[in-house]
Structures are given as structure tokens and as C-alpha cells.
Image: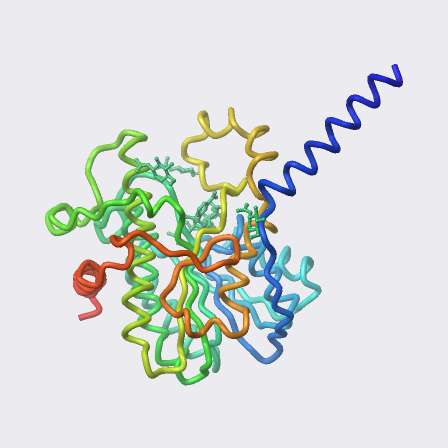
Length: 317
Ligand SMILES: NC(=O)c1ccc[n+]([C@@H]2O[C@H](COP(=O)([O-])OP(=O)(O)OC[C@H]3O[C@@H](n4cnc5c(N)ncnc54)[C@H](OP(=O)(O)O)[C@@H]3O)[C@@H](O)[C@H]2O)c1
Ligand SMILES: *[C@@H]1O[C@H](CO)[C@@H](O)[C@H](O)[C@H]1NC(C)=O
Ligand SMILES: *[C@@H]1O[C@H](CO)[C@@H](O)[C@H](O)[C@H]1NC(C)=O
Ligand SMILES: *[C@@H]1O[C@H](CO)[C@@H](O)[C@H](O)[C@H]1NC(C)=O
């Protein structure tokens, strides 16, 4: 019996060590405090967004939870307050799948709040469909919504600089392909409804996040705003909710081999807080480290083309 216990103990111990070695990743080392600063985190009612919000509130920031559902948003406000022992936590309704919602969020925010120091474009989804405005769902929410939101808030960010825009992309962008013909004809990154198509469109939407950040950095040269994109790691979150059968089967596996949301928030925090990375504006980070990307993810021509198309599709121009 005691040998059995020893074997179990060793297995747990070795498993724990392996997990720390292979899964956990680096932590954000900045000690920055954020008293008097205001941050927006999109999609912060669950997943890494909620944990990011808690970590920023703990450092003293006033945190705006920009979420699409009022009920879930209000529950998250209570959780973020409790998790951070801060009362400076506010819900403001934002549905990134609706251009009019993005516009009214920006208006409400700019009227109600005097400052903006950090914009964390974190929300993202992985499912088929169309947005309210007829854009492909993943293109519309993951990219266009954040594109419009960022542009509407840039003046305020600049007025409060030094300030930052942090966009949560994914390592999946490496395999993404942007089909501009399809974007022009279907306002979507692809057609079809299979799971494979979904992954392709998701990866392409994340390539949009990286190219958006690349182009934004150029346009921000000479201002007090810098920007970064990142891969948070493979995280045990709610992102697979619409593929429940497949994802549920893997839950025990992902709980061990994927990061938890606290580990998954570290690279976002690094990009938001780390002192001295301003010279890396426009770059992509993973595991709290700047990483080089494939030529297609820093392609000046594609980035400009995507920017101009996004201006039209978001109604910015
Ligand atoms: N999980 C991973 O392994 C992984 C890997 C690489 C990158 N990422 C990226 O990390 C980010 C956060 O993902 P997560 O894993 O934390 O996922 P999650 O648990 O599913 O959280 C996603 C958040 O985005 C919100 N959201 C979805 N559609 C929205 C919309 N139309 N308007 C406003 N908010 C919306 C969700 O709100 P609701 O609750 O209302 O749906 C939720 O708060 C995403 O950008 C994702 O692509 C995740
Ligand atoms: C993160 O980087 C550290 C140090 O560079 C390395 O030891 C670790 O294996 C990396 N972790 C992950 C999950 O990539
Ligand atoms: C999407 O990206 C992930 C992560 O890099 C990769 O494993 C997957 O094969 C990609 N899928 C497609 C269809 O591009
Ligand atoms: C996605 O999942 C959510 C929550 O489980 C559900 O409310 C929604 O109807 C699903 N959407 C689609 C398109 O399957």
C-alpha cells in the first residue's frame, strides 16, 4: 500500500515539475503600479480577459470591463472587484459584432471617462456566422470590431500618453492566409461551415490582428502611443464553447497541458506594463518575449491593404 502511495506521490510530483517546465511559461516581471490610470479590457467577463482585468485592478488601475452581455458583465464586475480588492471596476456594454455598438461604446466611454492609458483588445471567438453588419463572424469580431474601437479611442490614448494598445492574437496566425478576393466579395475570411474552415478563418483573423498591429505602429510613429500583438499560450478557457463535444472530451487533458488563465494572462501583462519595450512597437510577443514572425505577418503591402479595406468595412471612412 505504501509503495502505491509513493508511486502516486512521485507521479504527481513529476507531473507537477513537467508542467512547470513545459506549460507554465514566463511571468510578467514588471512591478508597475497603475494608480490614476484607466484601462479597457474587451471580452473580460471570462477567460484570460477576466484574469487580465483582475491583475490590472490589483495594480491600482481603474478597469473598464467592455463586454457584450450586461448580465455576464455585471457578474464579472463583482468577481473582478473581489479578486482585486479594488472598487474601481466598471462594466460598459460593447458588442464587437456590431459597428453601432462599437461606436456607442466609444461615445459613452469618451464622455464618462477622462483618461485612457491602456486598451487591451482581448475578446475573440471561434465560431461560424455573420455579425450584425453582415461581416464574417471571426473577421468582424476578432479584427474589424477592434480595428474600429482602437481608431475611435486613439486621440484619447495619445492625449494620455505614454499609452499602449495590446491586441491578443495567436500563434495560429502563422498558418493564417488572408484571401482579399473573398474579403471583397463576401466580407469574410472564407466560406463554408466545416470545422476545418472555422480553424482556417480563425487563424486568418489572428493574422489580421498581427498585421493590424504592424500597420498601427507605423501610423503611431511620433505619437506617445505604442502597440503590441501577442500569443497568450494554449489556455484552458471557454474559447471552444461552440465545439463543445470535441472540446469537452479534451478537458481533463487541457486542464493539465494547457495554461490556466493566470498563466495565460502573463504575456498580455508584459506587453501592457513592461518598461522599456516602446522601441518594439508593432512587434509580436509570446511567452513574455518578442518573437520574429514570418514575412507574411510583417508584410507592409498586405498590412496597408488590410488597413484600407478595414476602414471601408468598418465605416471609418
Ligand atoms: N484559449 C486559447 O488557447 C487561446 C490561444 C490563442 C489565442 N487566444 C485568444 O485569447 C483571447 C481570449 O480568449 P479566451 O481563451 O480567454 O476565450 P474565452 O474564454 O472564450 O473569452 C473570450 C471573451 O471574448 C468575448 N467576446 C466574444 N465575442 C464578443 C463580442 N462580439 N463582443 C464582445 N466580446 C466578445 C467573450 O464574451 P462572451 O462570454 O459574452 O461570449 C469572452 O468574454 C481571444 O482573442 C483568443 O482568440 C486564446
Ligand atoms: C518560456 O521561456 C522560458 C525561458 O526563456 C523557457 O524556459 C520556457 O520553456 C518557455 N515556456 C514556454 C511555455 O514556452
Ligand atoms: C491554425 O493554427 C494552429 C496553431 O498554429 C495550427 O495547429 C493549425 O494547423 C492551423 N490550422 C489551419 C487550418 O490553418
Ligand atoms: C455558441 O455557444 C453559446 C454558449 O454555449 C450559445 O449560446 C450560442 O447559441 C452558440 N452559438 C452557435 C452559433 O452555435
